[in-house]
Picture: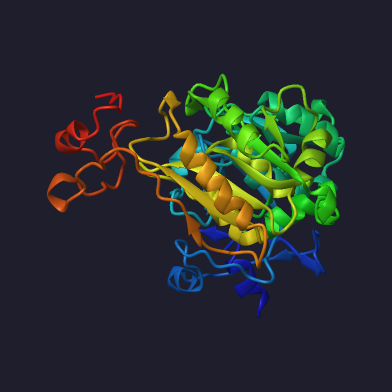
Length: 416
């Protein structure tokens, strides 16, 4: 495969040509990236890129193309950390969520920049949210780490949990430039790592993170005997309202299992990694706590309580990429920003039986076990009652619902 083709699969400038530094070195399961030389005047055809990539497919390649790139006289701006060069050309990531537009000459001339000599950026869409930080942005930071020096500032969102990971990686807090999306950051040299597709990042990023924390080497099976329940107690949304009852019933039905309620409070990065390496089953409501499954051994069961109103499938995707066994407990008439969710205890017990049964036999890279636990009537989703999805989604809480579908969902607190 030519260098141009390899590069074309990783970075998609809206205009060409452009200059990048990159080299990918793959050695077994250890993935490294190294800067070597400039590649100029690469021209890509978007049609070819679209043919090479199927963004809605769950396809796992044996080799990925992680890289680190250096762009001279570049800048970062906007809520998604869009990267531009001095000619106004935009470098957009492979994602169905992001499309940048080139800057006109008058826009470039009137930019109000915060100047920096050397800058590394980890900024991406949703990067301020823990799941997206851990499984999408953090692998990129690990790629960038070898190229950081005392003269390099690192653009990050400044979330509290970032500090623990910076300490773990040995990156000083003073190196961080907290990102303000209302500003434009201009750098003599900008270094960026290969972008991660939102929700469905490449498995090579997961593997890079696992390698870095020592999770690639699985513990003996006898030591992987813990059921980790990821709690959302105190969260602003999707808190399981009957969690105490649910856990009590689990302890009663499975007295021989070590069931640990995980909240993350007061636990260090290394403590979290060590705990999830011991997991036999990771379970709980859809949320950031399940992201730590990335540290588990292949064959671990992931049991997700998932809302059925516009459900994202990132944990199914990660399970397929990492060789986990995935079990879904679908929750009818539930949605992402629902303040609290009641989960039928018996449904969880039944799902646990499926999960424990799934700890034997070969891992499944697809939804092979799904417990349908729809305890309430589903809304009318016939074509006449559903508005086609618009180019820009409706406000949160409304999505594609019409008065007919809202009437069929009396338990939902619509924000119309």
